[in-house]
Image (cartoon, rainbow, N blue to C red; front, side, top):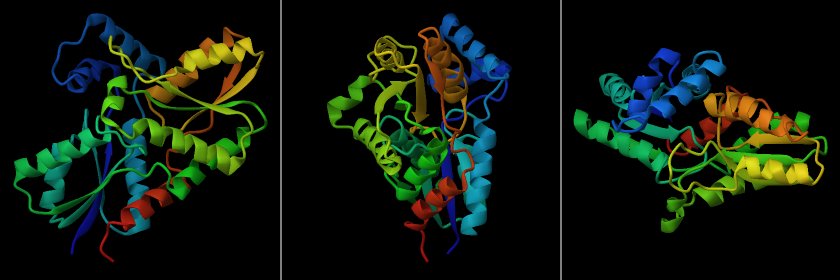
Length: 292
């Protein structure tokens, strides 16, 4: 049986010139307000003119392929290579069993669930007959926790640690979505692994919409630290597995500036990127659904 793995990521433009087209996909074809376009272009320009997300996802796929000895494909929901494009390759290569893993450790129907729906839609459009096995969540996998702990350990010197994950609209809580609980559980597990004395949790990268998003925000936590006289904070994202704009801009520029204005030095661990321990975690997650 020809088996393979498909890694799924959000997608991001590699050039500022592509931001307008990218936002069309993100917003499902809905009009993009000029102020939103201008702000997003500014953020990508500030991190060097484009996102490294695609490059890191490719390296993760290559490393996982080497470890598993099986083909590993990757696809983006909102940018190239699109899910439909990668699914065409998978069908053409004669894959019979496909394990799909979203590169977001914590599950939400609004995020990870949407990736899987897009994969299923692409399969149906192709009339493909291969089986797809979904990896719903790996938020508490021991090797994922270890990978985050390895990155955080050099900075765990007694300063408060603020763990973060990407915010989602607050309405997800109405249907008992597991995302909030899983994100906090990941943070709790990493803190326990390193015996972090003082830690907290916040949501970052809220969307530019009028709806309510999950909190507390990073900014309100930094305000509290400042009021308490804290002068150094370690911000440790546990909802992201590689560098992209939410790390390189939101954390490295926006939050660091916000903290500095309040007399706080903000540092963060290196992102997982192609961490061997993280790749080992993905390999174990995939192996649970592969035929041996």
